[in-house]
Image (tube, rainbow, N blue to C red; front, side, top):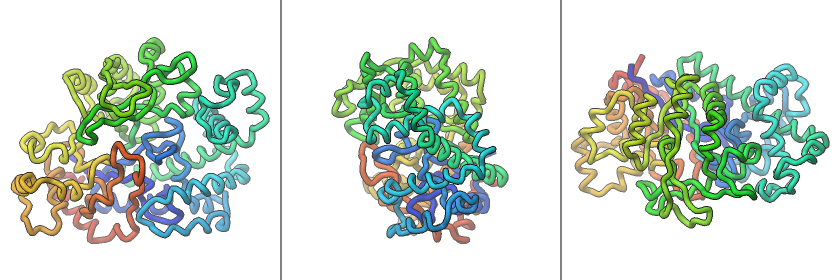
Length: 488
């Protein structure tokens, strides 16, 4: 059966206090998805963001982003008072996330809930027991970052950098500060799973996103450096990126440390198995970002200024995903198979059986026949978080290409809602899932795009408004879903 979904990160939901959260607006959005005939809500990675606010650069592959915790829900649970947070409702522009305001205040307010943890002692202890493999290291990492004035872990005192004998003394002395970070993770996942249950009970499944790499300055790299290609000083020997492509003429220099695949293979890929298992438990479907990196990865000198002069090195994706499919539910995995692809990547995708992705901004007008006769085992998009909005893209096309696309999709020149022609097109393909970013439902301009790859400012800020969800949109979207035979 063909199905449809909407791409919108939680941070982009409407509401008070500077950012979208897992509160009332999330439940209202789920109701909108149900009313408009959708089956999937696709979100971006949930981890704590670092400088630049990208959800693809997080300080932990397991932890949740505290910025997404809802204050009103904490008040309803009796963990904080209204006076603790109502002053934060002073965002002037509600169409953008106010990271400056949040970074100054949110963590401090969340720590107030810790004073009332006795109200949820049983739930909290159950959370700690279930998540002991990661939450203790993460909380300790956060506390050490604060102790070292937010310096990267490689610049910490040696005994803390190398997890030396003095670390136990630090843990005992700072027990309550460490426990505050654990408790905030408990709050995050309590709200997340409450939201997810509501979605699932109403027939909506959540598609999550798992970045392939982790930042160097992360709890994961600090706690288990053996999984990464580091030198004897624990500094990266190579860093990750992608070569020049449709997003950037100089490629993308991500700077993440690359994996020590030889070590991981000897360890039966336990790090990856645990990570993918956790993701499959967190989401209903998991999109693995940069899937081609499991066939061969592109790395650069640690001193590289851009991503032009990198090298490709084979990765043991066949062995890894053989174990994944044997021990976990591979039917819940989506492969982000974009970028430079070769025979080995296609072979890996066929071997795993995972559905790949197609984005019409990369296909039209040249590959119209191919995309119009798409493999059903595909997720088709008008665009992703890295793309321009569909109308932002369309308006920047050459006049000749626009004319070709108008004929291909039967778009009259005077048509006032051209964006719906693109939505109708992806819905009418044979792809088993069609995903549309929320911005494209309104045909928003490039000012509403989520991210411009290769840039570090003014990204990840888009927010919808409460008024964007209205009866007219629900009716229009439901009608389009039915026309595309994606309503069940």
